[in-house]
Length: 338
Image (cartoon, rainbow, N blue to C red; front, side):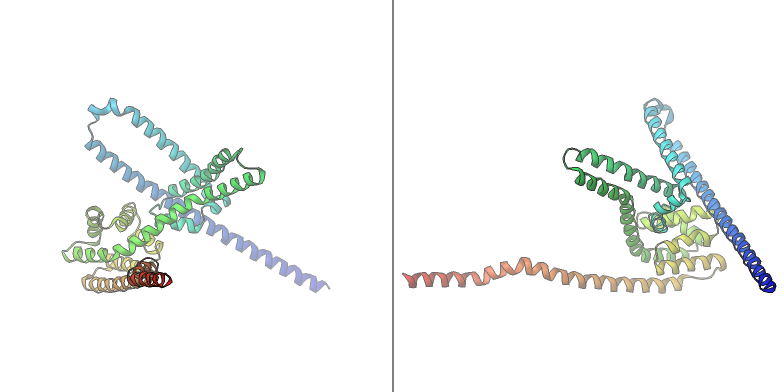
């Protein structure tokens, strides 16, 4: 009996030691994740400050502050007050992001869609959290005020609940639509990106120079990818490596072709080498894929147009072709009766 007790005590101590080790490992992992989030937030804020400082400097150079100071003072005061209010909301949302409540409001799917929309910093996620809370609070109040006196108790409660659900989901609907539009834009712009990259590499520019040219001079033809490359270049300028700055572009949109382009850019930036021939072959493959996709769309469109033609053209065709015969038979039957 004493031996069994000793063995049980030893097993209990071993289990306690394993639990302590597991708790220590989990604490280290949590600390590493917090450090990573803090570093990413600091880099994003530094990039935003750099971009804001550059934009402010350019605006200051272009504007004539002496002539328009008195006229623009009230507008600037209102703009600064609104900006301060937005920043206060953003900081409040950032503080709530890592709480269980914040993780429920801004889930991983929502964060991925925000990245697809081009909102990559924690400030945008904080504003999204505040927007969901604000819409979920304001829309039921508005619906309740409008429905008061118009419906009875149960219907009033149903209207408020529906308004609460719609208000909570309204910001998500907005970012879903924007993310879907940008995903389609990435697919459409990818062949142009490959051709421009091959052209710029062919004239002797480096990867960094090629990306800067595409960001600065080809924003009209690459509205989505140029903004994404601008974010990557800003992160690269603030201290991240080329692979780290392009990693979000490779993983956010779930596009295998875009992921292959990012791997090629990282490889060329790290090891060098000629990329014109691989880019040419890759561009031809993208164009073939796009032709096949367009043929598939045309086939689906023909099937859809069949129903439209049956509903619209067939009645008119029957009237034109069978109408005279029907009229003649009607007149003949009328004459026979007389």
